[in-house]
Image (cartoon, rainbow, N blue to C red; front, side, top):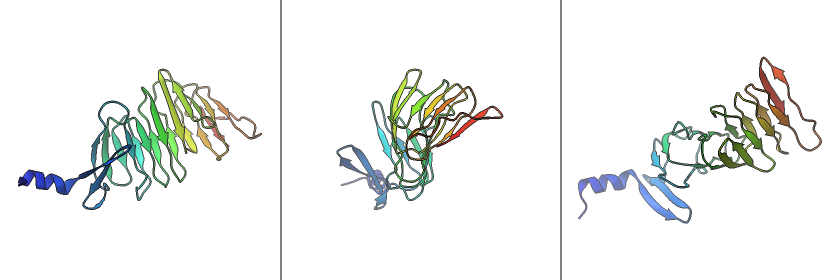
Length: 187
């Protein structure tokens, strides 16, 4: 016989095993709403692939908003929704980000050191950070001297200062424009 607490927990969340993690269902729906998710140690992925709205995920701030307000702690990887998303990864260690559909932005503006982002290869480096990104169209860089390389998806590469090196692809000349200490390249 189940206790009252066990019955209450069952109503709040049901965990289903999957090959690549745990799917959360709440009241018969995917875990939409305000959720508290803890990834623990190691490599963990939080997915918003089924979200009904674009999401803003801040791994360093442990927050995700847009499809409710979630607390996401201990995650290194993110899969975005089919809509416009913004993901700000944790500035240390390794991570993998997948943008999904829509026009997605990866935000490095909070990083404590310069970044090198190449959308063509999907690689990101910054100090001891080595990561991969895919499905993102836009990037916000750091206030330092960053290197940004686009791909064929019509990127918006927003420099936040520093002496940024912005490179285009497919015969489009590389552009580095400075406006009031900010660099902006449209590809």
